[in-house]
Length: 417
Image (cartoon, rainbow, N blue to C red; front, side):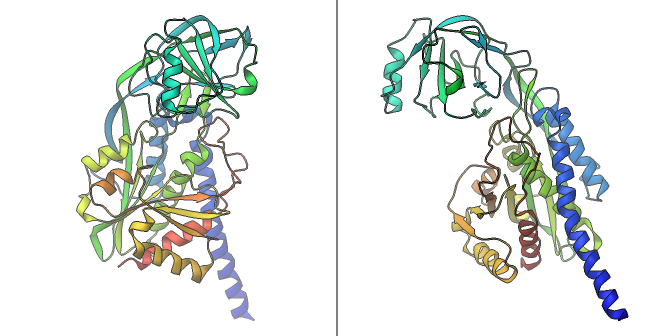
């Protein structure tokens, strides 16, 4: 009887500790997405506040630092909109972030302009360019149902502004904010712009920062058997920040979720009973949304030599998982996929582990280009579909496969030889 009671207590404690992982992650996610972090971007020191929070978590959990600091400082150029943004269609004010977003490359603008609807029959980017050029120097803002993704945010000489209609809440991006262009671009929700709209009044002041000072956050746990060989867990902790002085983008899934998991992994491996054979570095990058700046800077200025990295696992958007996970670069590393699938079959963690080919779509890319064995994992599922919108919040956040992915990764680390 005593043995049964003891076993029950051990199992209960084990379950409680396992459950704590996701509760800790939720707490971290709640902090990262809080309003006082301002979307972890480039206004009001949002990313700096997040970086200091991450460093405090590392310190609290006994994760080691380098030369008494957790930060690697660097800078990049970015355009911002620090003041109030106002957009009115025929004197009806639109809601920023909900009804519209302004391209991060847009210049300062303040005025009222006529609207001109472009034909719905534009089939290609070249057709879009030809149509646009027919309206040079008209002084109008041109409205298009066609979305020229590769041209969005670029200068079109003689064109005041271009509006792209979106069927849903438009997503914002800051990856084109490294330069201020001459044409104002907006994405506006289609239902917010009537078919008979005549004019637009718009006011937005841009502030270009040549050298925005930011930082990567880096901690590590020393390995028992191979202290000079490293496994890297990485994620970007930045998000889009603020568009104007009120509209902020919380970035729960992108990438509060990956950041929370890396911090949780650091806490796990820093426990003496979980000390790994290889050293593990936990690297949280800034500047990803603006163009992989943080990971590129580290890859070019490594604090641990790149040749000492045994494996890099990048986590970006891991808040779902009802449909499984995708491993970018999985097709390049069959040994990794074999190991993942074996662990998954033995533990029934995930419904599917899907291998994808090479893609330069997150922070693994600068390392992969330099020959570091690197993969990028994201979860799949329709339980949280918001991406780059003000609705990517932590309320009722699913974290569907959090424990399963956490288990897969920790078991994989134990099996790396």
